[in-house]
Image 1 (cartoon, rainbow, N blue to C red):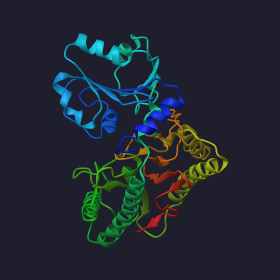
Image 2 (cartoon, one colour):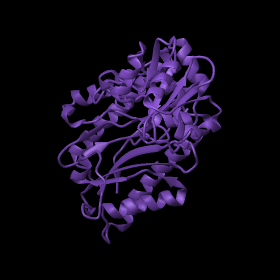
Image 3 (cartoon, one colour):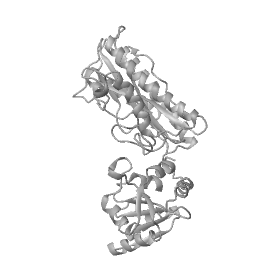
Image 4 (cartoon, rainbow, N blue to C red):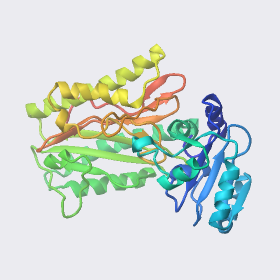
Length: 390
């Protein structure tokens, strides 16, 4: 569960898969999973280890100068001083354990999971312990949403869509007087503040060729004016300010004028069909009781875009995990940048956002999906079905 570590879920997974533990290691906050399990960053300066066993209480191995930083959790703390102490402490921590999970991905196939340095993996393996990826156990333990988080997400998801619509209206109202990307960006940020939303960065307001850059953000220097005949893409993401809040994330497109060029309509239709096919695939698999892996959904949507001749212009994965961070640690819909073989399990959320990026314009249609444990994959944002006319 994002925002609160579900120990029972982690241990149930370890028991079911016959793993002897989940070992988390952090140094200078290089492993965000460690701190998500702990429940927030603390000031530590030396290597920190946390073992989650299949049964019983988790145990820390901490340097003496950091030993008091985590005692409030009530989990036993073993203390080391020297490098030799640390090596002995790790050996004691793992004594009798043969297979453990760590933030490791063979060949760095899943960079979002691969957080632990190679030297630490070697140190553990030298103790005769087999290291496997923690990608699945961390998804069960820290990536599923609580009912409270589901509700916070729904509020944020509706809010970001509403603000996108407001932004298109703002463009319409100011078109004659003159308006550019940067003014629309500021309008969105002001609306976020009024609605009690926060964001880590963004939003994207991209006109014409700027919309062909998937991660374009306007600056004072780059901001393009918005005029009749222009294409506008808006991508915005935000969440409530409460602890544990989950992001909403959406992308919509519009044309400034009444008669949309045929090419724009054609590309929009390809992207829309890829998005809808992904949703249908998820829903059908749920009804059939089939557990999908993240890469499968990406592959299906990508094939639609490929068949229409735009394969070279869909340059990113289909979707990313949603959580307290906009790009979270659960399953991604990806067969392109990586091959995410993690299962799409109840309780997780993610985006679906196929895109086609040409030299003169780009189209991306982004929605959010939550896998409800009872209802299955549920779209939590309205779907754009037609190009907005400004």
